[in-house]
Amino acid sequence: MTCISRSVAETEQIGLELGQRLDPGTVVAYRGGLGMGKTAFTRGLAKGLGCRDRVTSPTFTIVNEYQGRLPLFHFDMYRLSGSDALFDIGWEDYLDRGGVCAVEWSENVADAMPEDTVYVTIQRHSQHEDWRVITIEGGLEA
Ligand SMILES: Nc1ncnc2c1ncn2[C@@H]1O[C@H](COP(=O)(O)OP(=O)(O)O)[C@@H](O)[C@H]1O
Ligand SMILES: [Mg+2]
Image 1 (cartoon, protein in one colour):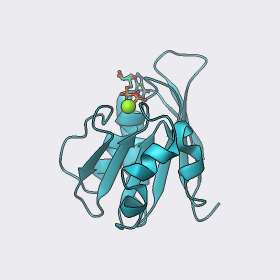
Image 2 (tube, rainbow, N blue to C red):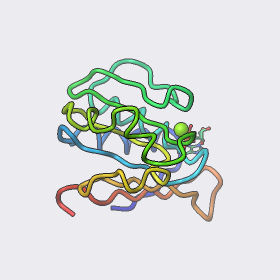
Image 3 (cartoon, rainbow, N blue to C red):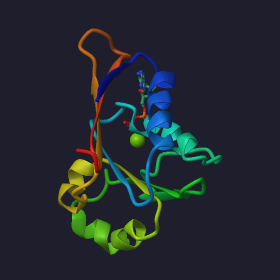
Image 4 (cartoon, rainbow, N blue to C red):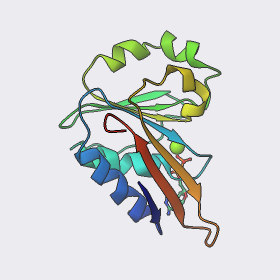
């Protein structure tokens, strides 16, 4: 599915709608560079999962946890050099905890993403600085 977001609020709304229908154990892997709206999308995702706490970027903490209908584990792999570092922080344990793992900069840990990962690719729209082209693909139905 591909859609166009015309504002931060629309990106959050698209994330919210995805969050409402995610199953336990799902990995949501983002692709797309700095400032594309991965953290904004995750704010909506968290809302859709029923998490009430404010979502902040895990750039420095690597992973933040939120409690909702399902727990959300929000990773930022920007500073990690490869998937070994992800396994070192307990990636497999997170996968087993029945939550949703949302991974920013998944490009850096591509080989650690499970087969049924939901990929969210966010790109800038060619017509407008503040528009984004958001593609959601993969998952079990793929
Ligand atoms: N349509 C849009 N969707 C998401 N963010 C947008 C959009 N238009 C402008 N922005 C801006 O882009 C930035 C996205 O930041 P952030 O979510 O932290 O991105 P990332 O996590 O991908 O680095 C914010 O400053 C936001 O205001
Ligand atoms: Mg971010």
